[in-house]
Length: 374
Image 1 (cartoon, rainbow, N blue to C red):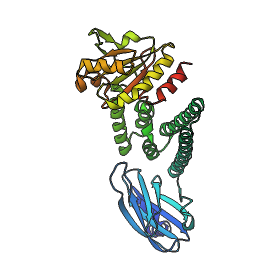
Image 2 (cartoon, rainbow, N blue to C red):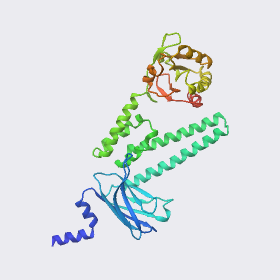
Image 3 (spheres, rainbow, N blue to C red):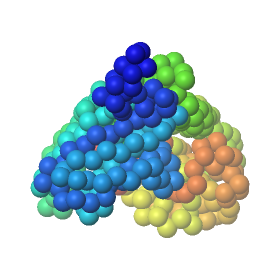
């Protein structure tokens, strides 16, 4: 009698019983209204360049379908239609996940997966989408203003507005990584973190390992980010201290960056033979002449080999600031210290020796100085 009752219960709840017999199995029960009968594929997605892998193929009949797969842990998947380019990304955070969509509205509306992790993923994607649109619109507006010759003050105002939107965008991503209760959502959010300096992710990434110690894929990603953060911190970066640099000046006497401590200093890496550097020099000269009486100066660091050519370029371009070089071309000690692989290149250092900006080109240097040397 007990066995018969068990069989009857399993027949009524077949999917749940199967899940118990097969640990890691998850099922997607979907309804796509107005969809023509066709095949539908369940695919595993990877947080790498590896192509999606088809795990199950189902049939849409009268708008309904069921697909399933086995998973060693929570991961990222998608369902893809045979007769349409649409696909829908999901997380297998439940044994059974319901899905609904309207085939006639796939171009404007995404489907909905009924589970907490998928609701969190949708919220993240909606937030990212709206903020990226705002960033793109502001960037387009700024380009149009620049092309139409708007005043410097108006351009600076809009550049600051764009910078503020970028800060909000990065904070949204970092905050999601730091607070999400789902490991796959955290991994997904980390995928959008390219615009965030690695050291600013140190705390959120460390928190992930503590919150999700058993999730293998996430902890593998955490290890990669920790390595990236360590490499970043070993190189000069915004917020870090500028490496000391001590090389001969044009008279052959040693001159060190630390000798300019107490001033804002643009450490400008260039060479007389570098055409882009020579083209950029007028912008540096303009900024220097504007702010040299406001606690700002420049330290030119040359990758020249010929002392005469170096000195001639300094004179020809009116570079009336401090200059140093060991005349060793790309073997210069400066290259190893600052880790750059192209010139012109520069870092802006505050009076304490901290790097506050990098690679300021065109009018970006003058705009930055205008903001800090009011």
